[in-house]
Figure (cartoon, rainbow, N blue to C red):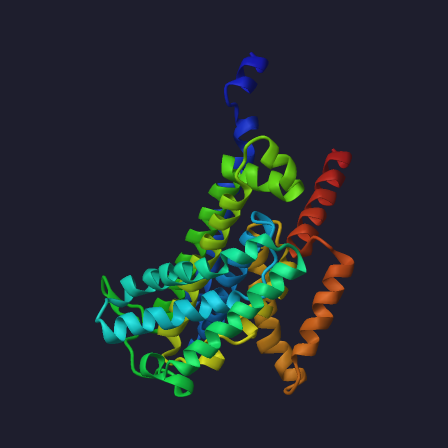
Length: 336
């Protein structure tokens, strides 16, 4: 009876998936607590910005973990998505909730220009992508007839009201951005558990070996580049419609390339939840604690915090939490 149960999908076999679903549901409930507790607009604003960074960190981790590519230029996709969505809504009258995913599509199309960089690896690929971010920033500055040039865009539609919920206010924006983070995290989980995810991990271990068995490594890495660009573009578009203004130096700022790396490494980019929590912790620490301690140059505290985390827990915050729970479970079993 025991053997038959184990081989046909007993609770013991299904437990990891069940725990994962329960954990995900619990985290969504936890994320909604600020609304239930009546958080102030200021706190909700901080959390919205942290979640925007979470989505960007998730897209960076997806490219680095599954695609095996380290990017220093996520600001390119973020900025293209921002401008594309704002321009579609302002000049063509596209509904904002449709313009946002179209901003992600435009970011994906712009990443076609990055395909030649796939021939490179390691730091060479990272620097090549950084160059693309600078190119797009210059284009946004020079094409003033379209983008407004250095002055940027200030008159374009904000988030609308949907089913009686005003997405433009802090609570509505928070729910929308949180939903997008949860959706893309789910996509990441499904992709990682699929045959494509298995093939991508094999490519990371040995690209030459996977080519021998017929895996098209270049095609799969291209898909990861496109998906990562799409996610970054969507969050760039969301950010644009939430803040209500755009200029090249902001939309393509190096901060959108550096902060996702810090957040993902701090949280643990090998996991799905690591980049999300890493971004929230890093952003809130920077804005609430670091700025109060060092108003000017407070980013130095981020560097110190990241260095300490890397030294103490190379797998990031998620790895540290998993290690603590593992030790606690071992002590519990030993005591039992």
